[in-house]
Image (cartoon, rainbow, N blue to C red; front, side, top):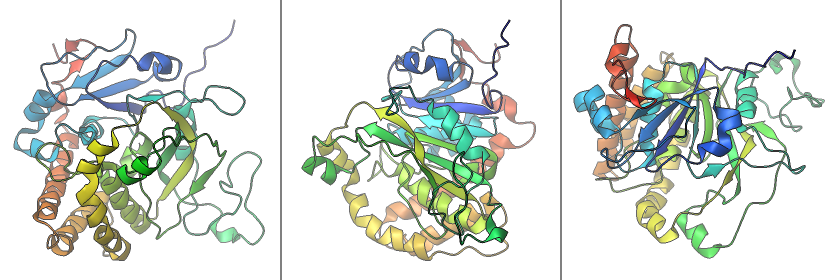
Length: 363
């Protein structure tokens, strides 16, 4: 009689999904996701009922729940934008988070085998990163690879991995101008590699296929103020990526990118995207140099301390560009206050206001 294999980190990982529609896409992911707990953050109209396929263990939060749980601090959670997913990171009680968009399907590797994206992310998070010295054979801890000649032995232990950034087959994650000039471009290249992003190097972080260690970097995974009432959109994951990279570099943590792939099924409208992005396209020419040059004091030894200092510096250096950055810096502080409030001992009961598997939590 065969003993069923317990999936890796079954009781230590939550899957966070932002959505405005029924989650039929979960049927395809059932073999990989069903053993895990889902946190669904419903965006938009809270009176709309989101249908979740039978057999999944989930809790669902809509805007009314977010307002009830956070009170005035709910102002830091974006509305009518997938940035609302970070509320799921805040209320999770698990060590690890995997987040995925509802238009992302199971991809296949070159042999035609379905890719268990979650399993690969877990592998990435559970083995070290090498941000301080680049290994030309990519991930040295992977089976069939190692540290190459010339790699210092004193650095071969690596550092803890905080973030695993996955990629996409089919529709690439392009900005609106690139979408417009390459409307038919599809990613068909499967690159069988995972690499650590070097220390001091920023990267564009996409939130649609992303995993992270919530205990190591969770409080910095704030997806900013986007969407309804804001002058910018589609920079939520980018903002979080720049913040977490600066903080990971400061705290000696690693960020990986590469495998796993998901199948990104549909391209968003480039004209709608341009309207959301156009200020960001200009602003990022000043935002990037800010993040490249920002330094955190040595006494910043926790993610929260780092993030609050970063918020101060955002207000000071980016505030003059546009009043939005002053508002964003204030929201960063509110986010940390809300995170600490929800995650301090004895306040867990405050979170039990969502819908769990169709019935209200705590009833």
